[in-house]
Amino acid sequence: MMINIKKFQNKLSCVCKNIVLFEIIPEIECDWGFHTVIQCPKCKELFSIDKKCPAFQTIEILLNENIKLYTDEERFSYLAKSHP
Image 1 (cartoon, helix red, strand yellow):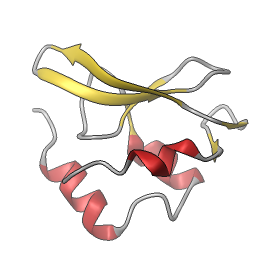
Image 2 (cartoon, helix red, strand yellow):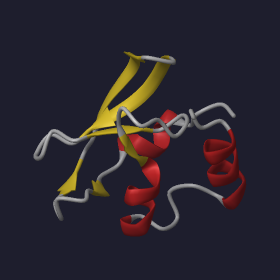
Image 3 (cartoon, helix red, strand yellow):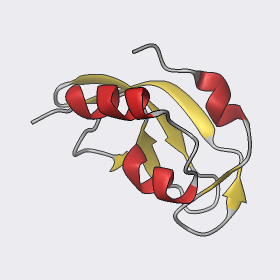
Image 4 (tube, helix red, strand yellow):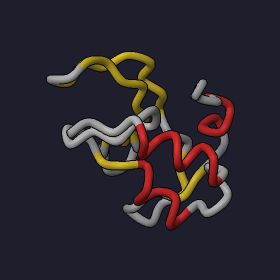
């Protein structure tokens, strides 16, 4: 799945209950490889947007607040590529 970065260039609701413009960090390392993550400018929480990773918050949390952010296919792909 190619990540559509444009989705994150709009204001979104964060878990901290603020409407924010997330900072996009295109490459950050974890124990299993590299990720594209977003960071809330208010609470500073990091969310992995390419695949589920225990080193960062999951995009699933944001999907509860931003229901149309990922399609069902994108959500399935995200979860299918998760780390152990």
